[in-house]
Image (cartoon, rainbow, N blue to C red; front, top):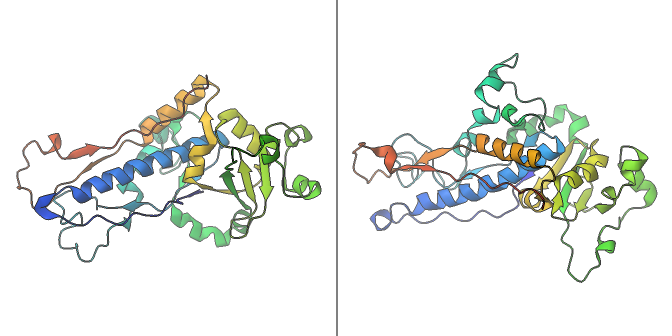
Length: 296
């Protein structure tokens, strides 16, 4: 479950003819940053084979097929607050998250998502919108099995051997972990710090940042029984340093290239109503998010 921990910047003022694209640029800059952080969450979900629950998404401009009025739908500039919680398709194309055309049409039912997050990249990635959380009252076995996963920020003057020391008794720690004795006692599992922090969802699991994908997978294997892992988008990016296998990195990169295709056209109402060659100058393609490299 991705959490957006960064404060939202206020919307830029409307400058009119002094700069018709002032708000449009803020929208693009914000979505570029948001999409990169979402991509970190996609990579982590793929590594851990978990369904991705998306955070609320915010937009500084509306998405509309015609000219906009101060970045809002015409005649709605005073009624539409900017920024606003916007639909998923304002930021990414949901259809692409279901996989390539051949893979999604091969499923037995329309609208079905990938069965696994770590399958072929052409299969897309299983996801849920934020409103899915409203249904969890009917599924207490999911709602009540949650923990917060965070990247521990270890000060430079603290020895690393002390940073992974658990703040729980060995007996309680062993009861919260699953898997074989070898897995629970592995070097990767010992990288984790498990503690209770007031105000967080369940226990807080901290892991030193900049790990490989294989280390993350093995270290967190002892918490496979936890149904919901709350992860701040910044932590999702900090946890992963690189992929040990080139094939895993390439598959993640291909998946990101597939699901983050998106274009947006900003055309202020003050601009001339000349649609000739419009797509040569007003369709802005967002940058493809970066993916962690192969370990060297």
